[in-house]
Length: 176
Image (cartoon, rainbow, N blue to C red):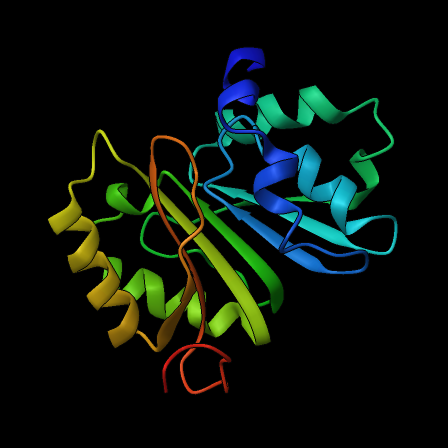
């Protein structure tokens, strides 16, 4: 993780989007590269939902944070094979390097949209070495069909990334 943190620093990537008191979702959290930083940024009054399809990933993350002050801020959720299966509304959702693994992206994106609070944001990043520009463009079209609008395109090393909000939410600087 140390080398990756030099290349993709979680604090630098997430700080613009997460504030004290937010409810945030680390979707496809894996062993928790971003989760602890999300918990730090959301603060004592915030909450992080660490969600993954694989119980083993959730167990690794649980072991990593179990004796830390952040443990009380993190809730674990095992996704179902065909859906996320959460009802809680979130201020921010991180979808990092996992959309390309989802068989039914349209359904998945609509479910993410249903979890996002008004004014909330989704940071979606895909690995540039694995997801071509064309594939990412196709995914962007699916995002728009699901009711999202691109708010910005942050620079994240080795990634294709966008920040999404709900379409029609009165975005400044969107050209609309």
